[in-house]
Amino acid sequence: MPAVTVQDPLALAAVQTAPGARFRRAQRVVSSIQTYEGEGFPVRRPFPGLERAIADPFILLDQMGEVQYGVGEAKGAPDHPHRGFETVTYMIDGEFVHRDSTGGGGVIANGDTQWMTAGAGIVHSEMPPETLVRSGGLFHGVQLWVNLPAAQKWSPPRYQDIAAASVTLVRSHDGGALVRVIAGNLAGHAGPGITQTPITYAHATLLPGARLEIPWRPDFNALVYALGGFGTVGTEAVPLESGQLAVLGPGDAVRIDGSPRQDGRSAAFDVLLLGGRPIGEPVVQYGPFVMNTREEILQAIADYQAGKMGSIPATHFGAGPKDTASP
Picture 1 (tube, helix red, strand yellow):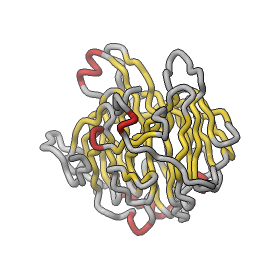
Picture 2: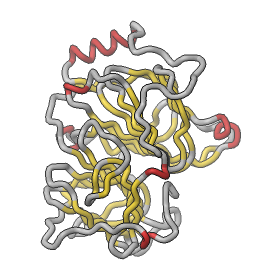
Picture 3: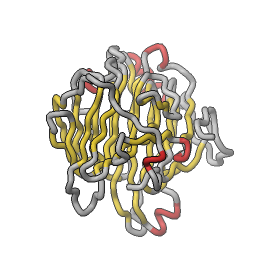
Picture 4: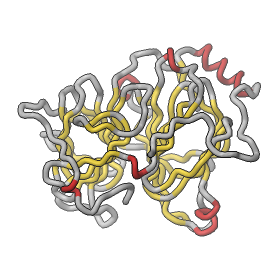
């Protein structure tokens, strides 16, 4: 699980909590369901399934893979619409090719993130590159859906390409944990992602026996999802393993420990750190549409069927409306 790493973590800035920090307790641990998306690629999904108020402002989290495709087995998600929220696609291993109805497109690979604001509506596809289909290979990524408040659901669609090299890297005090800050602010270290809804999104790798203690905004919720390996969350050392999500209670700091022994597949404990300020508005979801009322969902379906969200051009000429968050 390489994503982005460094040879000498001690050369990075360290994050640590202030004396007297109030660590959040793990109130609940949820195991993912295993299902399939798109043309049939496997995903592990810890939510939806939680009550929406617990995950707010997040709508969905899918761990795509980890899967080793054989020749001709790679699958993707052909043309489909979105409205009313943002999709955040973070590729850890392998590649996805993105195309959309604005004429934009590109490759998301090995530590890259694409942040797409669907807003008023967009049609896009996410497919494996021809090289992966022809030769097979490792595929592993994460897709997060972030809700938009009612006032921003009708904003023009756009996206950000966040290159792996632009992600902010920090470490635990002893260098045993590496944290990749993709978006938001973690202990004064800002990630490159530009968020419409205030959130923090990071990927941490903890070596066996390592401890990560980080400040966490008290007005944000806090979710820890285990991508691989074994560890614990909170001062109570609640066990967490690959495919499980911990829901943390109130406080201003988070503690995560990597187990001294990991399994043969995972040399370290890899987790996603998610938090955001709850929007607190009604949510009505129908498939790829996330709005505030049933009437808005019916309008989204009608607009898509009428072609008002556009279609993906046969020939792409590069990027459409976007904010490039990489150098």
